[in-house]
Amino acid sequence: MRVNTDRRLMSNSPNILVFLPNWVGDAVMATPMLRALRAGMEGAKIVYVARPAIGAVLQGCDWCDEVIPDESKRLRYFPRTIRRLRAVRAETAILLPNSFRGALLARLSGASRRVGYARDGRGWLLTDRLAPPRGPDGRFLPAPMIDYYAELLQPLGLKLGSRTMELPLLPADAQQADALLHEAGYDSQKPLVMLNPGSAFGSSKLWPADRYARAADALADSRGAQILVNAAPNPAERALAAAVAEHMRRKPLLNFARRDNTLGLLKALLRRCDLLITNDTGARHVAAAMGAAVVTIFGSTDPAWTRIDYPAERIVRVDVSCGPCQKKICPLPAEEGRLRCLTGVSVQSVVAAAEELLADRAGGTN
Image 1: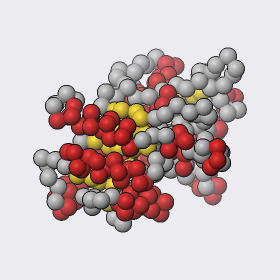
Image 2: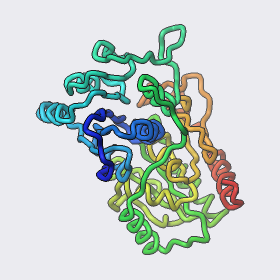
Image 3: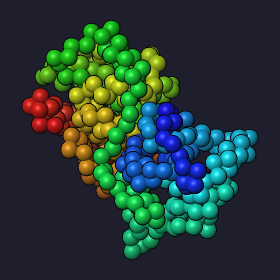
Image 4: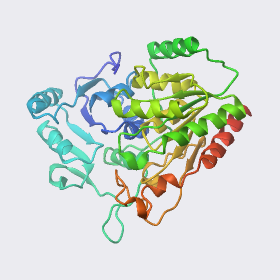
């Protein structure tokens, strides 16, 4: 991540540690809060603590002055992480993740003020304890993560300026995307549609590969859409991308089943895409931050947790008696309708949502 090396820090200004979320989508939903923190703490030195993937998705932003890689999940690197945190000499630590480990790191960093949600048995490690929203039965209530993170600004006397998510784009990533599209024969007069059939969460988010293929073929037939099949650089997602391409009647313009991919390249391609069709994954939030229209297919997860109020998004889901269960793997056997939250989502419903968004973009209404 590029850090803000131009800002001159006052010697008596506060140092702030910000522990970033562990999931890409959550990190994107945190960007309104991170932007507001930078604007409200103009003279402070802000240091992010982040996993490598989170640093990659935020690479290029100027809302922080330093990034410390969070290596603490590996016991052998835990002491090194603590030493790096202590070297910051932070007065304040802000915890976006809800983990006990994050609160322990903040306590061991030496920060005298530690702001976070009091949950998962970690309240005693915090000085500014926020109460997560709960229902009468004591269970956590769904809360949009953009607003959930924004509440962490309140103890500092700050407020969210805008709920709009945004991500920076490095020139090198933009150039690589342009070169790939040019090499593949991209026609700027035709819609560019990305499919994102994978998810790190689990199988309960995975709309079937053959349905992705049928939706892509339908859009290619009706609108001449050029199809990109996205995949993270791991065997499971590459296999899904390959399965989608195998079911398609038309060859995709680009397929990342056998091509290296990065989060920077994903951002750059989504900046050029008219539309993303995706499961409920981080790519959804990246697309919204980069300005692409989005059709999001929900299975086991509740959209209320990740509501982004993005005008160019259409959510496609079906109500089932057992959901939303928030489980990674469907617990039902096949004879009781296993994964019916996903199999109930028709190709026609996804294509209809995609057609509506593409028509809006063609008409210049987005």
